[in-house]
Image (tube, rainbow, N blue to C red; front, side):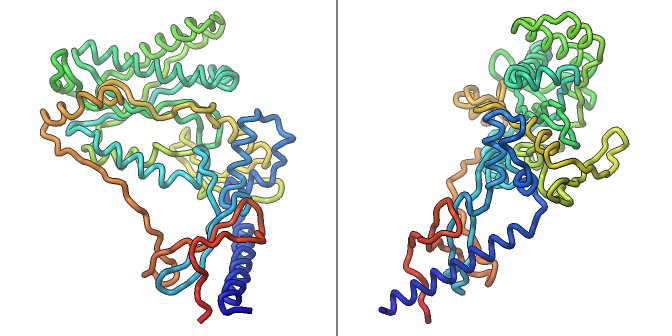
Length: 391
């Protein structure tokens, strides 16, 4: 047997050991959304095809079921294994890079003005419709929120802008559809020139008036879609709809920091999962009705999966949307002119190559030397570089 063959065989044996060790380590963690989903027989539950496919993808995330690759440090030669991610937008493990990339792009769009945070919330009477037809209800939520703000802006003679982020969950995974909206404190007049907000108090617009207009516009949209249930309409108009307003941000930098917490959030993060057994899951949450008191809740794995499935958005549904002077069509032709008027330094981002650092020596970069397919343990490897020397 040649020296090269012996080197390759030793490398393959070492890789197989790494695969075994990594698999055992992954199974021993036992405190993630994926661990809960793996304990549920998804095909026997009452999920839609899209929901089951999504939940199954999350359960496979970063396991041998999706394949992976072997990395070697170019300094110390240490080998490490990485299983592939599912890259699903509902996965709590796969949102970090997407979030950073989105934020970097938004930094180039910010204007030197105050920004306001508004939250438009749907009453619980609409939860049944949201479960039956989520695409319609969430689309109407976006449209009604923007129509409300746009109307108030037009009254003050300016074209506003808005970034809206849809969240559908409460802390205990209940259905709680609401929009987090970031709105600049001003807009453009009919001549396309910048105009700051007229009100001198701490809020962009009076929140009670916003709630009434929001309710009317949402109800009108439902009727236009053929939903004319008189009993439902009576219940909707019997309640005061909540539009929550916060104090303005200190500046564009604070806006970016805030957006980083909300843009690519999912229904529940792994750090809130405290314990997973074959039958139950225990997780932490905050009870906002009792002053954000920290509590823990225990659910059966099946009930946890059911609640999580409520927050799986329809295929191709866009959950982050831009309106007015922050919309894509407006930015293509007018944003640079407005930034020039306000003397904003133009930021241009270039694509970056992300290098993974070795966790062993902290000095070298990781280089992929082999990849393996969606099975485990794999019998064959595709070496993308020469195996490491046996010396």
